[in-house]
Length: 96
Length: 403
Image: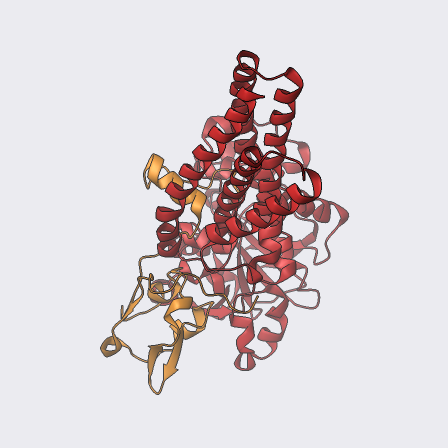
């Protein structure tokens, strides 16, 4: 499956180029090639491919990247609506 | 996927003899008693209270004896999968015992590693460890298995168990700084949503190296980390990768559907008995209703994963609905061409909703749907599904009433 884009314009990824130290780690950890190097700084290359896994933000030593990470799973989200965020779990559902 | 299990559940489980923590016990022989609660496994009497997750009866990976290390003997993993490993893997792929497929966390070896050998980090889901060790046939390395409650690396990273804190704890408990002389850890790329490499380096001196996503690319990466093919850093979702997910989709769909269909049939039967139709007509309608739900399940859990890239739209609920519509129309044309229009419409709506709902649930198994996107999709899809289901069910019950 080549075209792995989902709904566009909904992601929570933000990037502050002025904080970037050029370490490249975000470009290594992103599983969808969302981030790229642009000279000595990173840039968001393909925002709509972001699945909000949070790998880039967690591994940015300068906190230049920010994202609201979560699980893109309908069964899980239904549970957060019913039971609240803390009690929700995948249980034995085929969520991951 | 195991977080909701309680200590009571776990204690009530019968522990089969093969599931005892045989694995890294070997390490104890060389470890002084006061340090025993460290790395992995100690006999029950020596154990300090542990978190609930570690009360799980562990599966034992196949071992080839022990490897000596600076801290004592470390269990050596077989790099070939045995029949039992394959059988166990098949079972969890079918959705059987998936939340009880954990191995003992701790330090293991493959081959004959020395203090210079690389350290590879993984999760204690047995399927994860198996898919790693089977790729390491000609490698001498240390394998550090984190306690992720028996959940795979990516899901565990997302849920905070394959995490910085657990890695630090495990490094310390296994005294890795004494086992190896270098200060490098190779982590799977998908662990990055849980582990902050710079934090690990700052707090332990170990540098985190992000390896490839797939274990099968690991040997090439270790031989030449600089020449990692960019495709090794991109997640894929091939036809084969989608097909292996189908059995778990089906098994998790069956339970809620069986309940809903059971309740609907009970209501239908009461209504049919009170209504004007013949018993035969009532039973025929009930059968058709069950078939409509069944077609919806197949469409949502089997056909949607297979046809995913070619289904129209971006929203999974829409993809599932259009496939459900096609399946319903096709089935009615082939199987029941003489069916009354009203009943046919009602059954089609039921198939469409069932297919749409389970297609939407498939978002949880894909590697590209964002939580913001899924939530946005659901805010529209769930009310639409509910309304459609009510209309479909009323139409079906009406057909049962009139016979």
